[in-house]
Length: 263
Ligand SMILES: O=C(O)c1cc(=O)[nH]c(=O)n1[C@@H]1O[C@H](COP(=O)(O)O)[C@@H](O)[C@H]1O
Image (cartoon, rainbow, N blue to C red; front, side):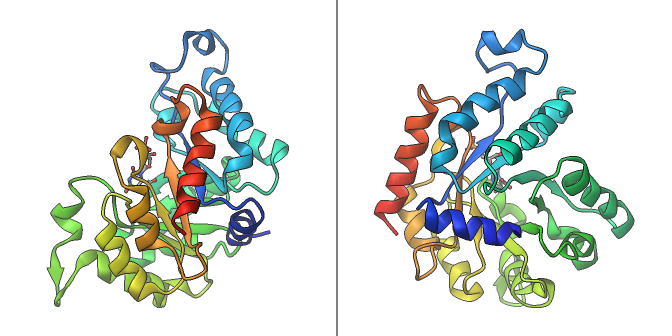
């Protein structure tokens, strides 16, 4: 099953738009895990077992593994999700983007080495850098459009030909780039007005929406602005808000229920 088919199935059958971000900081996880050979994997495994029934996706951020030389923990984590919870797709958050020949290697990294179902990419080097990803018909390419951070305004909001740069990204993603219908857009929950504006022009292309929980985005505003008329169309990510919660299972369930109140 393709990434999109798996996500749509989880949206409906598990009634959830929640994505748990697997961003374990080796300095912040409890001491009992730090002594183990694969500390991040052991930590993630407990989070995954506690939250699987409440999620439509998992999203590990590659820097938490590569940055500390624990890539093996990332491989073990993704394998564990595929083996123990088939049907829950994995987004590798790597925000890649480079000339075609290098992008081919990034494709290998995401889909052959790590066996992710989808990867985040930065489109600001242009359409040719996305091609190697877009050709992977069963995988999804998740393109940064309007990000959740305060500095998103610095460049993404600059007006070109009467509309902000992020709207140009949104229209290319709806038209020329999306011939295989395997694109999603990153639009942050911290900017509900932009979520609404982008939703108005892109039809039912799904959003990956980070920014709730630790970054303070408002769930009600984000859900009302970003969902499609059938109440889906969003993958709403929380990382620190769930993985460091006193009880990650309760935190994931509460987020699912809060989102479901508004869609
Ligand atoms: O592509 C992303 O996932 C992403 C895009 C964006 O605009 N903002 C953003 O926070 N993210 C990622 O989403 C996660 C947010 O983490 P928390 O703030 O802990 O929930 C991190 O993995 C970020 O790298």
